[in-house]
Length: 548
Ligand code: F6P
Image (tube, rainbow, N blue to C red):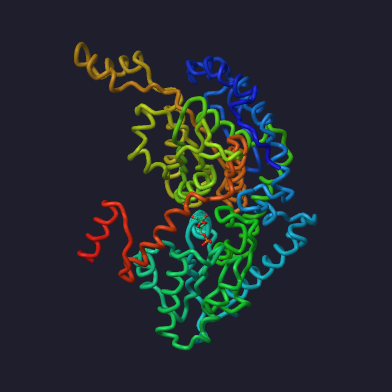
């Protein structure tokens, strides 16, 4: 079970507070100048991806103390508890076993009296057979036409993961099959997707772990109505609707044939579910073999995470760095900056993964924490982001650690685009690290012929403090395998952060209040019921009623 102890009470935490005083004034520029081996010392490899931590504000001593913190908080014990299926999601009394979804060993793993790995294999076979039928044209729509469009209807973890992966691996997509996603309960989302489609050649995947999520059920009903408007006979539903869920009873009640239900289990958290049946849209888009490569990439990170010592363990080190910045530097945000257009949805996906997992203020004792937990995660693809918010990262008043992510090989090598893209990737991390001091600015302006007051007035605006921490993640190529490994790295990083912050990372009670209130207000809006609200909420509802 997870240790229940405040991280601030550990020896390591106290040592880190002292150590921070020596690191804080140091400039990365000097650390690089003093140690030519810094890149090698702080770069870690797995498969064909490198994780360069050297542009972070750390020394070997920092890592030693952070690893000591991980040890005192029993991170190794927590890792074992997760992999072996202990019920570490204590507030929901559940095991946390997304790793079982990509475990290709011939071990067995007992959960609630069943061999979880065997059940996983059965569903994987069902997914493979389904994909093969779809791609070979054996599975047709009700008029005998081939399926040309797949629409995943889901939200949160039942949308963000598959959507991000389908976009990231577009280059591997099966020909003649388009994949769409509907998530928002705003009717615009469904309308804009459906207007492009033909019911005869469209297959809907209703993805919902609980099969009770209001947004998803509403969108699914709209899709069913749209389909039946043309197909008329409900019998045809079975050729056009499949479901991914733990709640098979609700699936059947909705009208989806039992043989079209792909199940998973409550030991798979929603935001960790893309490896389960929830990944069916990915498998349809890429073909099952490519989906399996994604799983195998994740499995390789799982093995690394479970076996490597803390000092060389990439997800552990990434988590420790985040704790270093959050709890010692006081950073409140973390930017994810993929330099690959295909990865443009990664920041959005990681927002749910990290902020829904660790956006908690209550520790495992049920007490309010007296230290900061999850920082805000945000970001966007480079180079676009350079022309929107990079100004603030370079010259703003807050310190923002960033992850830069790029593939060495482009999947679309036209002209000089890729070297240009990567020049920006390298230049930004270098500029953020080095900055530009007064001497350099003065020289630059003098060379341009500027002098006197004019020069002195402009100079402070052209200064860059530098010393802004970045982690660079470079992979040879964005393959399904490397993507699987990268995503699993972020999952494990999130878990380790939660372990150290002494919080429960696998529940999400914080989204419940909004759902409850929306349910009550929905009744008021649709059935004219009324109940008391504060003056702002009542005023807004009245404005809506009068203006709709
Ligand atoms: O936002 C809350 C949440 O429960 C997420 O954790 C989950 O991914 C999402 O809703 C969707 O849930 P479901 O898959 O059950 O429809």
